[in-house]
Image 1 (cartoon, one colour):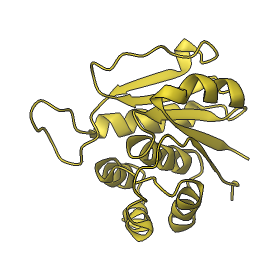
Image 2 (cartoon, helix red, strand yellow):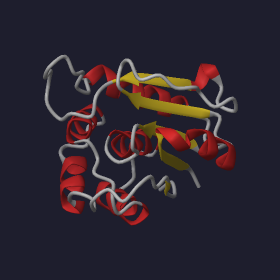
Image 3 (cartoon, helix red, strand yellow):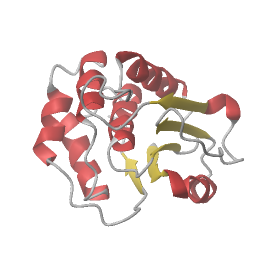
Image 4 (cartoon, one colour):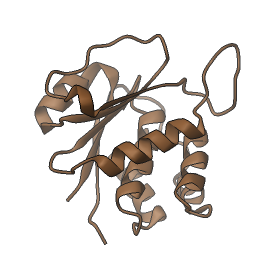
Amino acid sequence: MPSIIVSPLKTIGEMAARHQATEMISLIAEKQDFHRPGIVQASRHLKLAMNDIAFAGKDGLVAPQESHVEEIIAFARAWDQSAPLLVHCWMGVSRSPAAALIAALAVSPDLDDAALAQKLRKASPQATPNSRLIEIGDAALGRHGRLVSAVKEIGRGADYQGDAPFALSWRHN
């Protein structure tokens, strides 16, 4: 069963080692510096510079773009699924849960959007997927509004209670 580990930045080393993740997507502000866990292959690390905003360009911040989502989709489709994919952002609450949903649908397009969003909510009560990433992902994956609706249905996550990595797993249909 494929799974994606969603993590805040500060636990990526622990999560990579615990889950033997050799592939990783980082969604982090442009000048945010960090060390890639040694277990993660450099050739299978996608680093996307973006801020956690839901609208285009404010005060020099980088909003998620179509090109970012296209890279997430391409990277996910090249993921061999022999080990979990590690996806992280600063807190593991907004950008990375959105990217996890997009990646899951990229590799398993027959998944039901609403059921996948419910799995996300069950795995992480505090996840609030970035709405701009979700909207762009919905369009790029040809979901015809289903992903946007599913994420709206689960609503905003609970108030942040601290770092809480989680796994999003599903069965192929």
